[in-house]
Image 1 (cartoon, rainbow over the protein chains, first blue to last red):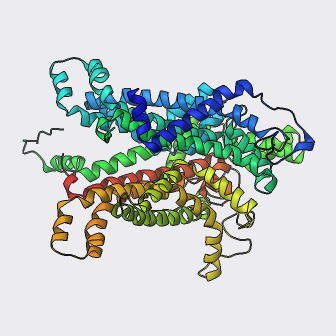
Image 2: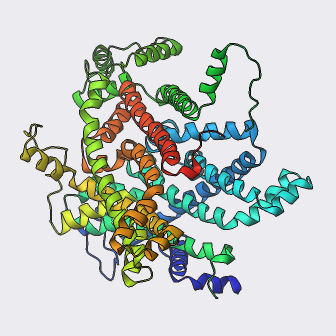
Image 3: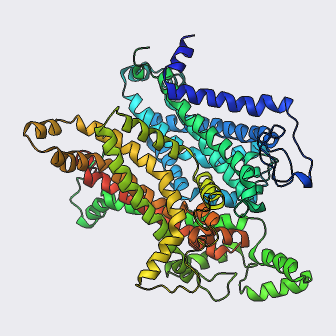
Length: 279
Length: 355
């Protein structure tokens, strides 16, 4: 109950939370009731929104709304998995780096340095041609492999500053072991930081994933990126008829990203009591 | 890190070498060079790990385009590309490194006789021009608006600008590009998308003429708009928080107490100090000028280095890919180096000469 009240306290954050809920519902529950329209109807190409097709029809006469409903799941699963994997790597490596120091720290930092100097987008394009990215999990693993270094650095600097706190120093003096220090002293105090980074890692994953699909480098089945790609290559830049076809997935993606980013404001308040202004 | 100073009164050469090795600047430069070397080696291997090779991709292109038989197409492709891809990999690698040291990036596999250096010289200026201009616009605009927001904190202006800033920075740049094209270009017909493609109109020759500059800006207008829209929010928000912090500093209060005019305080006290941390951010973003352009250039068919990289990836043109990767890597590494050094120069409190 208290969490809910905190959630509603920040208006922007709460709107973001509702947005995320809406998209989760759209992508995971709605498909159970709305069948995917795969039939080509030559006589119903590019129809404007109507009672029958609330978002109109695409270049094959398919119902755009049904495509949107079915196209969100992969995007979200990849985003979540990528965020989860890269954040886990970052938390482990970042805190080890900060706690152990010495050559471990130097090594991990050197690796992140090199990793960050490689241009990410082109690298992604290259990697995508090497591995046939047709599975959700594989795509998430590849995206996470590229995303962890900057996160690791962020977590490391966070741990470095937390390490100076008295309770962490006390735990170190008592020789409670690194595992205990990380899981019982550091993690609980970094939760807001980690949660927010997780959400931002998710938005980053949505960005790169749609980009890969849009460039035609990933061959996931129907998803928002694919709809954009098809609409784009079928001439959305020439034909004003294709307006709804391309705008619907673009808006879905943009609003989803926006909801995620706004949601972080509430997360900040939930995890960080100092930010709460009189609840 | 603790350092034990050498007590031996031996040859001072050793001491001097040590001094160089421990000097902040020398260490940073060495690290930068090492990073570039590692990335160069990694990309060398990486591009060759991609399925297919330049000859093969060209062979298939010829087959599908001119209806040639495999052997015919293969012969023609091999004749065009004067490269020995069968040589042992380490031999190719050392050959590449040797040439690189002399500033020779090799020749493009696809366009015979075109050196990668001339290739980069031809396309890089357009990317630097379009992304550089937008970085300048977005930084100036962001810093100005950010200060305004900090001065008018909690006013309706601040709320509106904050909302716009977070909206703009949350939406991926390619989506904004699509919306621009579809809504304003195709639907409302405010501009002609096809005519604005490319980096110059056909027949336009570069020179110091009004027509040339106008044309260059006309063609870069859409990419610049997208870059500015997607980056200005971040500058606004960081400048706002930085200004809010600075406004609480003692020297600002003192300046007020001394009766200095608000305008003077805003420009020489608050503005100068609040924008300090942003300059290191600016240095880092300069590094991403080249790398960040690949998709936007692809979408607007803007002939910059990003679009060429995408083409080279599809054609498996190893030499061009390596060349462009090198340019991007160097710009990122140098920009980070500058950011590190700026940090010490701009803020004496964290000058990191000796640790």
